[in-house]
Image 1 (cartoon, helix red, strand yellow):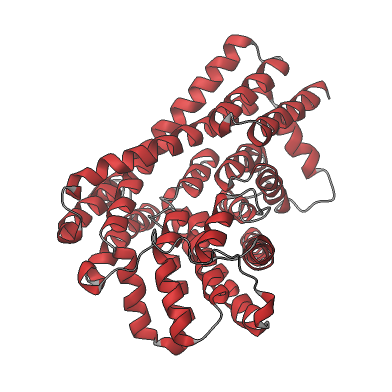
Image 2 (cartoon, one colour):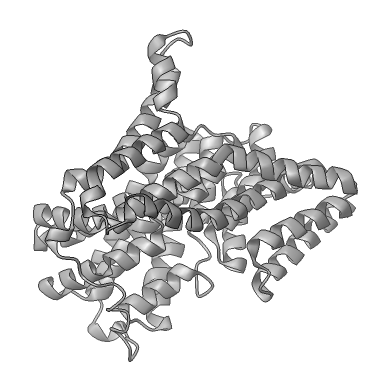
Length: 444
């Protein structure tokens, strides 16, 4: 009981440091791990060893993947590839089915590009489509934002799903295969919510701020001549995903001594696959990159990737300490003995953390670390836990989340409107759909 109390107090201190101070998630998780480890009687040296070991193992597992994924995303961003994907899909679907094009664009673009950045890049296109079709801007904006968030939550090399898979011991290729399906289902349900609910609301339902267009200069429109072709834009995204998934399939279907498996094991390794994706991006997109950015983009990407790696590795360090204390096992046992369905436990842990401190990635890492005992006890499969955790990272979103303010600022909507559009879509539609998918996976 004492261990459990100290564990919960340590989590409370960690969340307090994240929310009420400017210490940030990196130091908050490390200090939280230190408090939990020493308070639960692990010992000072053992706690430090667990922290450093967990930090190092997480960096080893996903550090390069985050770097390579960020580099790939930066090339797509700077070459206007995201805009090309959007405009090409709009030509195929036509203005009448513009919602399908925007949803598909968001679904594809957010795999390598951070969702905040992707929404900013796509905002001029969303506004232009709204103007051409005469539909309310918020309907298209909410749909595109939801599509971005879906693949962001479920599909590697986005940091959160990548880190969750590493922590719970799930094969990355398997996580991508399932994640793509669940993200697609969630995107469809978001589309239904936007078209059947938001699109039926009167204009007065959506209230704007007085500075609706103040971000226009930042998110300027891009001329067709500045964009690559659709094939050039989409291939760097598809190549690494296909290589990783094919490697996972071959690993299940072929004998270990197969020369084909040796080849796919190399090119389908998550690090090598992303490097191949980067090389393809350089070769295909270099003509559309700003002068001096062919390799300069790598430096920009490293500046972005560094903080992400540190925060993710700190989450791995916390998970290692929690495992060493045995508190995670006690917590999981207590929840498993309760009236709650097991599949709901990772979801609730992640959702409560997201509600408290705002970061979906940090919340997912906490949910993953506390789900390990449930997986090891055979109470749920790693893939069911992965989907439940990722669904939970949608839940608990409100004004504490940076994506909330990017949406509100770039589309000019006030807090009330953003809460009843984007936040309802995230907390109810996306989270609910993901949880339902996790339950289906757990029973089949």
